[in-house]
Image (cartoon, rainbow, N blue to C red):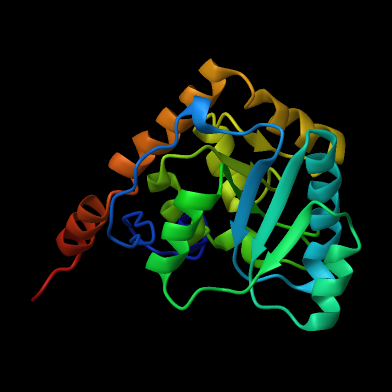
Amino acid sequence: MALLLEKYGAGAGELLYPIPESGSFGAKKFEDVNFTELQIGNSGLIFDDLHLEIIENIVKAAKTVNAHLQLITNLPEKLSAHIYSFGNNVKVIERFDTVTELLNYLSLSIDVLLVFYSFKPDKEFRMFTSFPSKFVEYCKLGLPVIIIAPPESSIGKWAVENKWLTYENTGEPANIAATIAKLNNRDFWNNCQLQAQKYADTDFNPDEIHRKLSNSIKYK
């Protein structure tokens, strides 16, 4: 978004990430994870014309490494049934009333968090100018976060620039499965946790975001 604004004549700007919900959560230890039934969680809107293909690929990938996908979203019954047809390792859960309830559930019931976009840049225009607020929220949960998105998307560019350890840029089942499988390594798991926590404590820290926002507001 900042680059687009500059293109159209905007002056100096300040990059502000979405301010996450307050609260602290304990990091899950590697030895507490059941890798024979790894739980991968995602929350947010799903559109049948955009996301069914990538969801099917994720379900296929997860099955090859004994993982299960939980999608926390509100869907019409017909669309939920379609997603269930992808495999027996996917589950659709109704959205929670508050962000705090969602984060509590994720921290207790999920092992790996997931952010994804479709690989249809001609249809999902928001991927170019939108930075997913869920990613900012996820980083403070003390869990690895997998990003699956095209390299030209805003989150894809961010992941490359920041050398995100669990970034997958093709959306292909084999590559997604390989990314998930890396988490079986204790050192890799711990490094992914530390990477997420680093950004939770710095760029995504609500106090830091608020400070930048306050400093950028000037009164005449």
